[in-house]
Amino acid sequence: MIKLETLRTFVAVAEAGNIKDAAERLCRTASAVLMTLKQLEHEVGGALFETDRKNRLTALGAFMLDTVRLQIRSYD
Figure: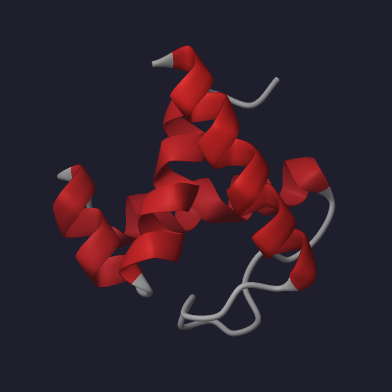
């Protein structure tokens, strides 16, 4: 099961376009955010971002972003 915090972290990085800004927004360290993303990618079975800079989503990442936003909105 994927935690809600993990999904919020993914959305924050996708919206910020980089780990540093997302980490600041989430009040977490960049390394904690990166580790969370790696765990999420392991759980979904594929890369969510095209590069290590986390500024472009893969096709899976784009699908996940749309789906996760709906899930978070529904939860909230």
